[in-house]
Image: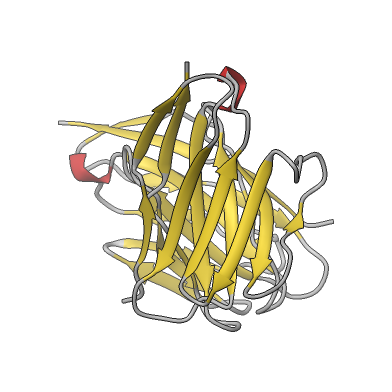
Length: 112
Length: 114
């Protein structure tokens, strides 16, 4: 079956530090990969996505590259801000009509 | 961008009562809606998938008689928690999709059963 494994949190960083949140996946077929962000008390928002191998998704300074050879989609940001504090979810979807499979989420706290 | 709303955003109910949560797609036709439950350790559990006009497809382990899902129109789905108990207290999130396009999430509903 399909699965997503995320780096366990919580992750605590100082402002302007470099962020990496690891995500690896197992899937049948060729999935699309997603990162979602959930701010406190809110639902999930799509942060970025990549639909095929070697694609790089990017948004708000975050980026992730679809690595088929390592089945990974690690999230990175060069300089985090306090406002980036949230829970980040990695997810995959095998077909356009399919349901998404989510990782367990990683809580990021950025301190000033 | 596409917007999905949920109502109420939070609700407190007494044990044994039922509570209904609405999920609406505001600017697109949601042919498919998903209902998730989020546990305190953050993991998102898919409860059911519903297609407009059809019966919902429940995930294994989810009681369909307890969590009633109705998707009667292309812009509205409802989740009714029947005979709620404290263990049903959770954060419920819906998401909606038009055709095979992007899946958009609602802001969630916090349910507390006392």
